[in-house]
Every structure is written in C-alpha cells, then in structure tokens.
Image (cartoon, rainbow over all chains, first blue to last red; front, side, top):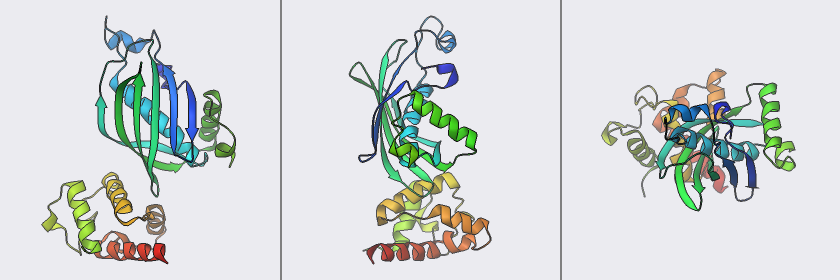
Length: 157
Length: 93
C-alpha cells in the first residue's frame, strides 16, 4: 500500500470470473504521512481508506468482467461497517463479489479481514463507463500487470 | 398478483422514501418525483431483480441524448411499466 498515492492493493490473489469473485492482499505501511494526523501518537488506518480499499478490489473485478473496455466509478457506499481498528503493518485480505451487473452500473459486496478477524464490509454501487481516454486505459493495464492481474483472457478479450 | 406499475411504485416509494400515494401512473420519475440519476440506479437494481431483466438504461439515455426519444417515453411510470412488460415478454420468448 502507498496510501498517499491511493495505491491500496498490493496483489490480486484470486480472480474468479465464473463465480464473479476476487481476493486481494495489501499490507498497511508502517510509516505514512497520513498517520501523522490520524492520529498523532496513535496511528490508525482511516476508515475511508478501508472503504476505498474495498472499492478498488471491487473495481478490479468490474474491470475484469468488462475486459478492460470500461471502468467503474464509485457512486454509493451502503451498510458500511468498520468493525475494528487497523494498525500499521497489518496484512489485509480483501474480498469482493459482483452481485449485479446492470446497464451502466454494478453492485458489489466487499469485506476486509486481518489476522482472521472481520475488519469491515459494505455494499458498493459503481457507475460503469467507458475509459475517459487511452492513456487511462494503458495506465490501468500497467497497474494491473504490477499487482498480478491475470493478463490473459480477461484483459485481452 | 400486483401489476407492473404497482411493483415499480412500491420500489420507488421504498427506495426514495416517497409517499406511495403520491406516485401515479402518469408521474414522471425525474420531473414529478424528483428522482436523480443515483437514486434511479437503486430503482433500476430493484427492478432488474424483481423482474429478472436488465433495464437498458444506457441505450435509453443515448436515445434521449440523440433526440430519438423523449424522457417521457421511459420515465413516465405508465410508459416505464410498458417497457418492462416488453422486456419480460422478450425474455420469455
């Protein structure tokens, strides 16, 4: 994770397009300027970044389901529950399931666990739109390759 | 068995917290009921699930933007009900 750059996914561990599920992993950095303010002397991973981490995990699944032809934009967060604190150095296991693919939107359910305990969960709604430009698409593919996205059929189909 | 309109009206009432009695067949979802695009995604999701269809929102939006259709054709609830009935019939064909 590089919190300041919103790079919240370290690697895709499993991507199942038949079951429409994904699991990613990420390690909370031991040092970050964000921890200087959240909180001084008591560093905690901000809840909004945990939600963003679930959104990015869901996002890779939506991108895969759309074969890199379209990308998701977070539109709504529902029933978000932040169940426990996350501290620097913890390894997060992030899971998401694509519950519904509509016309121009997608619904996922996502969760994070750490050390075998549930950390948070939410239902997420995305608008699914064409990539704004070719450069964005290329950068998305480059990032995907760097985090272990299976660049076979889903990416090139 | 409730009508398509009743099902839609109940979904809108529940999703958008709009009094059920104020939702009429001639109501325009956007102009009369004030439903915005984000709330309409929730409604579309509920309709997709309830009827086992996929509302072609992108196609409808494109047609309106291209001047080939008016929003009345898709967002007046009577008309929306008719479109849904067509989609359900097409699915079963």
